[in-house]
Length: 493
Image (cartoon, rainbow, N blue to C red):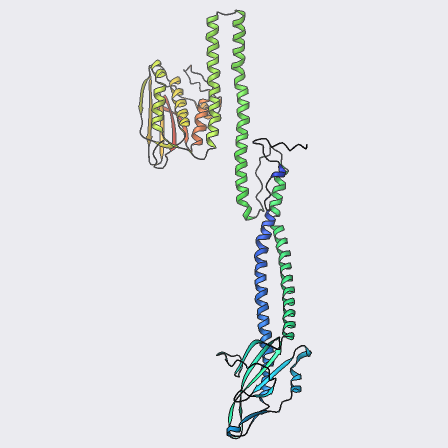
């Protein structure tokens, strides 16, 4: 019994052979250009063929009219009164001159004043005397298609005035011609038209193929250039000499590569900094544990030191994760609107125990400031700045927080009474792992707080400054000021 094939695993992605086929750019362009051209040429061929047939009918109809007029010239009126009649002296052999190449036959009938047969074929049906109002010829003639003796013919009916010595009247002359010559000419016209139009389509197709090949050459070159790149090559694609239609694609690709390069560089820096910064506290922790195991120090003292090391390592890890999260938020396109003042007051309340521990004269003044930012980013920014000011402010001194707004920006200023910072410190404090160690202050940290603040502010389109507050040449404290653009009028989330 043959085994049936096993069903595909759920969730398995289709292989290359199952990938749906799509039209290539070359085929799309060719079909988009050649199909309308082919339709236009086909319509033009039909129109030209009909116009050629109409011109051929006009030419042959003139011959029929000439034949009918030649018959009319041979008519005469004899007799008078009731004996009035029309006579014709034309012999049928005289019409042979009008039969072209023996490929068509001509039949005629001449009817007198009362419709009686004068000469010609007596079995020819009476002609239509409905002369059109608009006529190309200077004669009372009507042309139409008919059938005679089971053969399709072209019929010309001419009303010919005749007169004698005493009387005059109107004779009717019918001339019919078989269609062999016209059909032969129609076929020749059709073949000639089709050959010309086919040659035109072929020329257009060759030109279109050549132009399309040249037009998509930059696309193929771009594809080859991207395929030949290494997986770590995120440099910008060259735009010199590129077609104008490809410039938006190249610009978007270069911007995307720039973002990827930034993310990759940030990831490399994060891994490098993490491995470097966590190595020291882990080594210290290992030494402390080994010392406690050997009994070199009192167990309670050993636990206190281990706890302090773990706390510093935890703080460092949290700050490094915060840096990574800032970069993640930077890539998001939609950002909610939050009231900065509510976040600042919540952060101040969270740090109130630390403020009370250092007996600081704390004041806070805020007003509503809707900014487009994630609440986490605003909280992390405010907490780092305020916590940094609390650590570096002498116990018992004043610490003020003010959040003000103008027409377009919101400014948060945290003013402490610490020793300030030097010019050399100002230039490097926002770099990662640059510890802010103010003169006369024993506070120390990981050096990531201000770096996190700068990354957050830059991601929100703002700026941050640290300025010494001086009076009479003496430093009386430090002002940390952050300015962020206000969001358009929205309801804060």
